[in-house]
Image (cartoon, rainbow, N blue to C red; front, side, top):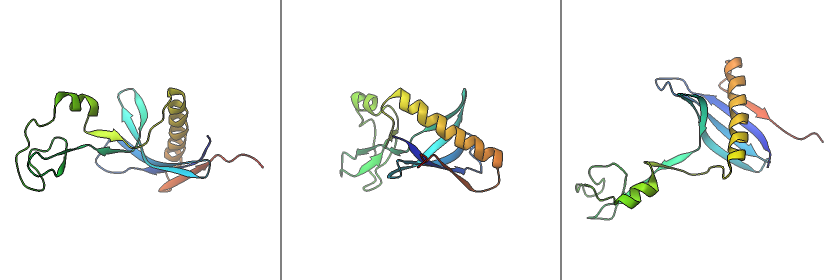
Length: 137
């Protein structure tokens, strides 16, 4: 699987850790949007697109985001309804939508995205940059 295009969208504003969003196209047929470039304690890294986890309300069954204190549907108090095994399974409030399976591919993907990000920062002109990696014909 080859990365055929990377688009980098630099982030401006209050959030100092989030540096950019990227869109990556694989083999000209599959795209993953909203891969984040984040400044961590040990340098830049990527975070895959994710969504907030939800748990149903005991009263009405409406799915509320983990950490909510009250149900958004019926207003009932939500207190400690999440069992210990569910918290361990969720690990956090977010779960990746798409992610690399192997460490080798994750490192490959991260290096390509960070290279494109560094080129965009060096250019610092446009709102996005497209980096294409197409095989010679």
